[in-house]
Image (cartoon, rainbow, N blue to C red):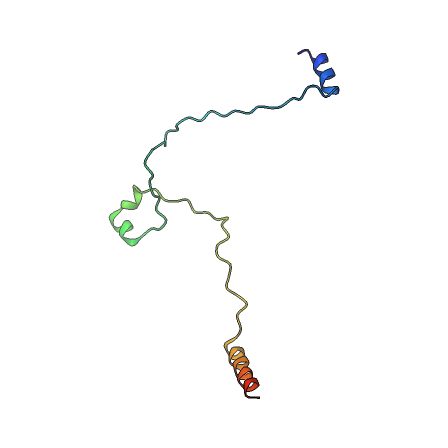
Length: 92
């Protein structure tokens, strides 16, 4: 459509323009149908035999958060104190 007609149809809300995106997916140079497991740890045996040079290693993720620290526990003496208090309360 000419620009003038297209602008008129858009003004009258009779034309809706959409963007269509398409992707071409092709096999790359590292394509394989077999699943290979990447190594996560370097062992002393790998270093001694030199087999680490031929094995693929998983890249290290420095932005991973990891496990949250275990915190908020009572001190052992406070635990004993609360247990003794509970015993005396039960005794009256």
